[in-house]
Length: 74
Image (cartoon, rainbow, N blue to C red):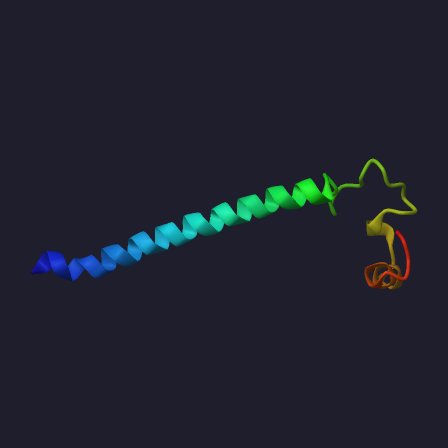
């Protein structure tokens, strides 16, 4: 009888591990797809193709808002 009382805990532990692995796998695939679509651009490093005038880290909040809303090209 003591073996059966531990079964729900074991099932919950297995479900937790499976859920964690599935979530990490999805996050990895999403990261790879994003890098493929967006390229190697990073908010922390200046891209090679951008100069200081067009780098988004140098944009003001108004410039960012206009760019996001589609009113202005970067």
